[in-house]
Image (cartoon, rainbow, N blue to C red; front, side, top):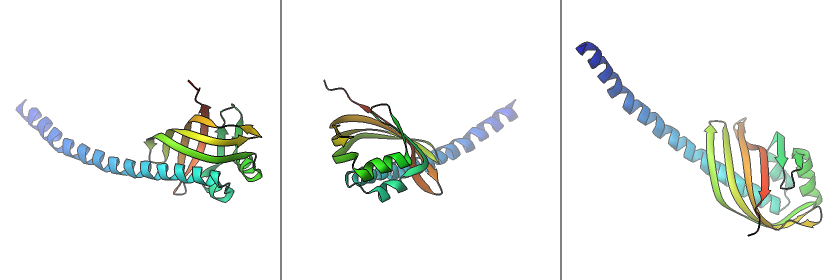
Length: 155
Protein backbone atom coordinates (compact mmCIF):
# COMPACT_ATOMS: atom_id res chain seq x y z
CA UNK A 1 0.00 0.00 0.00
CA UNK A 2 2.83 2.39 0.91
CA UNK A 3 4.50 1.52 -2.38
CA UNK A 4 1.35 2.48 -4.40
CA UNK A 5 1.03 5.70 -2.42
CA UNK A 6 4.68 6.56 -3.13
CA UNK A 7 4.26 5.89 -6.89
CA UNK A 8 1.10 8.04 -6.99
CA UNK A 9 2.82 10.89 -5.14
CA UNK A 10 5.86 10.78 -7.44
CA UNK A 11 3.61 10.74 -10.51
CA UNK A 12 1.77 13.85 -9.33
CA UNK A 13 4.99 15.63 -8.36
CA UNK A 14 6.49 14.99 -11.82
CA UNK A 15 3.28 15.63 -13.79
CA UNK A 16 2.21 18.98 -12.29
CA UNK A 17 5.31 20.96 -13.34
CA UNK A 18 5.17 19.37 -16.79
CA UNK A 19 1.51 20.31 -17.26
CA UNK A 20 2.17 23.83 -15.97
CA UNK A 21 5.11 24.26 -18.37
CA UNK A 22 3.01 23.01 -21.30
CA UNK A 23 0.24 25.46 -20.45
CA UNK A 24 2.72 28.34 -20.25
CA UNK A 25 4.18 27.45 -23.65
CA UNK A 26 0.67 27.21 -25.11
CA UNK A 27 -0.28 30.57 -23.64
CA UNK A 28 2.65 32.27 -25.37
CA UNK A 29 1.72 30.68 -28.67
CA UNK A 30 -1.91 31.67 -28.17
CA UNK A 31 -0.91 35.26 -27.42
CA UNK A 32 1.18 35.34 -30.62
CA UNK A 33 -1.74 34.02 -32.68
CA UNK A 34 -4.11 36.55 -31.08
CA UNK A 35 -1.76 39.42 -31.91
CA UNK A 36 -1.33 38.17 -35.49
CA UNK A 37 -5.08 37.80 -36.03
CA UNK A 38 -5.81 41.26 -34.60
CA UNK A 39 -3.17 42.75 -36.90
CA UNK A 40 -4.68 40.98 -39.92
CA UNK A 41 -8.19 42.20 -39.03
CA UNK A 42 -6.95 45.80 -38.90
CA UNK A 43 -4.93 45.47 -42.12
CA UNK A 44 -7.89 43.87 -43.88
CA UNK A 45 -10.20 46.68 -42.77
CA UNK A 46 -7.70 49.31 -43.92
CA UNK A 47 -7.35 47.65 -47.34
CA UNK A 48 -11.13 47.47 -47.82
CA UNK A 49 -11.37 51.20 -47.04
CA UNK A 50 -8.67 51.77 -49.68
CA UNK A 51 -10.46 49.41 -52.13
CA UNK A 52 -7.17 47.47 -52.47
CA UNK A 53 -8.45 44.12 -53.74
CA UNK A 54 -4.95 42.64 -54.11
CA UNK A 55 -4.34 43.11 -50.40
CA UNK A 56 -7.83 41.87 -49.47
CA UNK A 57 -7.38 38.76 -51.61
CA UNK A 58 -4.38 37.48 -49.65
CA UNK A 59 -6.41 37.45 -46.42
CA UNK A 60 -9.35 35.45 -47.79
CA UNK A 61 -9.22 31.66 -48.13
CA UNK A 62 -9.91 30.26 -51.60
CA UNK A 63 -13.14 28.73 -50.25
CA UNK A 64 -14.14 31.90 -48.36
CA UNK A 65 -17.82 32.29 -47.52
CA UNK A 66 -19.17 35.59 -46.26
CA UNK A 67 -22.61 36.20 -44.84
CA UNK A 68 -23.48 39.87 -44.94
CA UNK A 69 -25.69 41.79 -42.52
CA UNK A 70 -28.48 41.40 -45.10
CA UNK A 71 -28.19 37.59 -44.89
CA UNK A 72 -26.86 37.22 -48.44
CA UNK A 73 -23.86 34.94 -48.95
CA UNK A 74 -20.80 35.79 -51.04
CA UNK A 75 -17.77 33.85 -52.13
CA UNK A 76 -14.29 35.30 -52.47
CA UNK A 77 -14.58 36.41 -56.10
CA UNK A 78 -17.95 38.08 -55.48
CA UNK A 79 -16.63 40.10 -52.54
CA UNK A 80 -13.52 41.14 -54.45
CA UNK A 81 -15.67 42.20 -57.43
CA UNK A 82 -17.90 44.31 -55.12
CA UNK A 83 -14.84 46.07 -53.68
CA UNK A 84 -13.16 46.58 -57.06
CA UNK A 85 -16.32 47.95 -58.74
CA UNK A 86 -17.19 50.26 -55.85
CA UNK A 87 -20.41 48.33 -55.14
CA UNK A 88 -19.01 48.10 -51.60
CA UNK A 89 -17.38 51.36 -50.60
CA UNK A 90 -16.29 52.02 -47.03
CA UNK A 91 -15.20 55.56 -46.28
CA UNK A 92 -14.18 54.56 -42.76
CA UNK A 93 -14.34 51.62 -40.39
CA UNK A 94 -13.23 51.50 -36.77
CA UNK A 95 -12.79 48.16 -35.01
CA UNK A 96 -13.34 47.66 -31.28
CA UNK A 97 -14.18 45.02 -28.65
CA UNK A 98 -12.09 42.43 -30.50
CA UNK A 99 -11.89 38.99 -28.89
CA UNK A 100 -9.88 36.12 -30.38
CA UNK A 101 -10.46 32.47 -29.44
CA UNK A 102 -7.66 30.20 -30.62
CA UNK A 103 -9.48 26.89 -31.00
CA UNK A 104 -6.53 24.89 -32.27
CA UNK A 105 -3.09 25.65 -33.75
CA UNK A 106 -4.60 26.18 -37.21
CA UNK A 107 -7.96 27.77 -36.38
CA UNK A 108 -9.14 30.88 -34.56
CA UNK A 109 -12.49 32.60 -34.14
CA UNK A 110 -12.74 36.38 -33.84
CA UNK A 111 -15.67 38.47 -32.65
CA UNK A 112 -15.52 42.25 -32.87
CA UNK A 113 -17.52 45.40 -33.36
CA UNK A 114 -17.14 47.84 -36.24
CA UNK A 115 -18.35 51.39 -36.68
CA UNK A 116 -18.67 51.85 -40.43
CA UNK A 117 -19.43 54.66 -42.83
CA UNK A 118 -20.10 53.71 -46.41
CA UNK A 119 -22.40 52.34 -49.08
CA UNK A 120 -23.28 48.94 -50.51
CA UNK A 121 -25.19 48.66 -53.79
CA UNK A 122 -25.89 52.40 -53.56
CA UNK A 123 -27.50 52.08 -50.13
CA UNK A 124 -26.11 53.79 -47.02
CA UNK A 125 -24.73 51.13 -44.67
CA UNK A 126 -23.36 53.51 -42.08
CA UNK A 127 -23.76 52.01 -38.62
CA UNK A 128 -22.56 49.63 -35.94
CA UNK A 129 -21.95 45.97 -36.73
CA UNK A 130 -20.92 42.83 -34.85
CA UNK A 131 -18.72 40.46 -36.83
CA UNK A 132 -17.67 36.84 -36.41
CA UNK A 133 -14.70 35.66 -38.49
CA UNK A 134 -13.31 32.14 -38.64
CA UNK A 135 -9.60 32.07 -39.48
CA UNK A 136 -7.73 29.02 -40.73
CA UNK A 137 -4.00 28.61 -41.12
CA UNK A 138 -3.10 27.10 -44.48
CA UNK A 139 0.37 26.98 -45.95
CA UNK A 140 1.64 28.92 -42.95
CA UNK A 141 -0.74 31.85 -43.61
CA UNK A 142 -3.79 32.93 -41.61
CA UNK A 143 -6.86 33.57 -43.76
CA UNK A 144 -10.57 34.11 -43.21
CA UNK A 145 -12.61 31.08 -44.25
CA UNK A 146 -15.99 32.31 -43.03
CA UNK A 147 -17.32 35.61 -41.78
CA UNK A 148 -20.72 36.84 -40.75
CA UNK A 149 -21.91 40.32 -39.91
CA UNK A 150 -24.96 41.57 -38.04
CA UNK A 151 -26.07 45.16 -37.79
CA UNK A 152 -26.45 46.31 -34.20
CA UNK A 153 -29.87 47.84 -33.66
CA UNK A 154 -29.91 51.52 -32.75
CA UNK A 155 -31.21 52.11 -29.25
